[in-house]
Length: 60
Image (cartoon, rainbow, N blue to C red; front, side, top):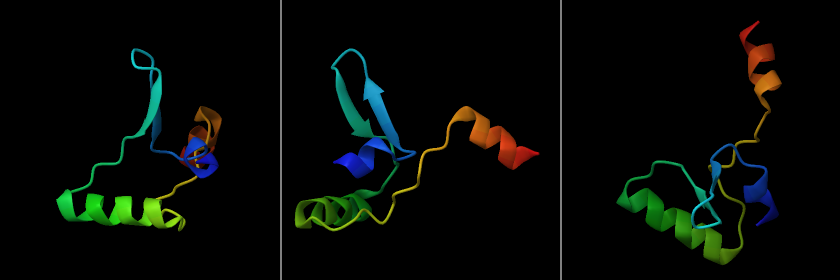
């Protein structure tokens, strides 16, 4: 899941030492998300992560 490592929604939980997707999906969207993930297709919710400086640049 190299794509997830570069995604805006990727979060790391230090207690469980696992990464997870923080995207808020309803039940149907989540089922489609899992189906896409299992089929090997690219996630349609992928959003490239920008560092904190990238966010500031967009505000200016």
